[in-house]
Image (tube, rainbow, N blue to C red; front, side):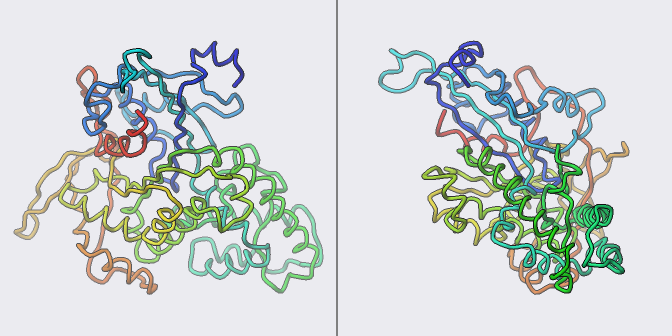
Length: 455
């Protein structure tokens, strides 16, 4: 932003800026998290654990024109209307990189506070799909290695048979665009079906969320077996795979990721547990791959992009905590921490402070107790997507995360000691007092960890 633009936007040239990255895999709740965070920073009546809100240091908060003219604006107003309107519903998910700037007027602090007066801190929130971070692993592989890995893990996943059938009868010595498009479309359909079934590791990420690149040659390739290695089709797909890495993956990390100061990684742990052991193990591996980005020494080109800059704080948040009674929240956090243990240790080693917690950016339920087979069970009650009211007990999460993670690592097909259900609740109609943002669970604690030290 030039000097003239800064003045027109009412931004002081010396004002501190915090760039907060928000990511996660599909259905983890990125859009809801950002919408509720911004709404609760503007109306802070429910932000008691954010110290700067509790002690009155934040005097005002307002939206500013975003600083990057070439990045779409996060559509805060439309998403908030969806969540809080007369017929509340969940907003559409993340489809591309977007950004929003929230400015906070802070009370004067410190020895010279009386001389300098109030200050302004700008929070730039960058929303991007977690699937794009998974593409970092492609940078360490060539096309043949990636193809072998994908075809090996494809077995048993939705759409795998359709893709194998599409490969049948193809002459690998010939290349034509209709064949390339048919293979890419069939492979993309497999990725969509796989993601819908609860799997996390679906690359390339732009095949799922192509944005403006949909239909381009860089997104028109698919994995090929080793028997195709000498043919023209393999040669052209290898060229497009390399173009994808150089023209899609690298620019994302250069233009967006490299500028982030703080990061929140949202994880739908409950959804993976519901899908079963294989989905949990797949999520664990995917999250480890995502967090490779936060230890860039392993990828030399990424270290060159970042230089000495590093993400300072990373929050891992298990979302949808409102689907559980609060007595199970600590267990959900423990499972998330155990899933991310290796990746967290590596991030800690690189100097980033990390934290794991269970949150609900928008609380859609209230707590209840139900009787079942003579037992009283801690449940939650809310409105289902079809409008019905329901009380729900999802099952008891184990006190020891190993009870889930060991079967997942061993490739078990199902849980032996429990059946973990899930229910899709709609946003509840809201009755907030003046000055209150949307109801949540620990969003204030999350905000305090991510930005509290800079306020």
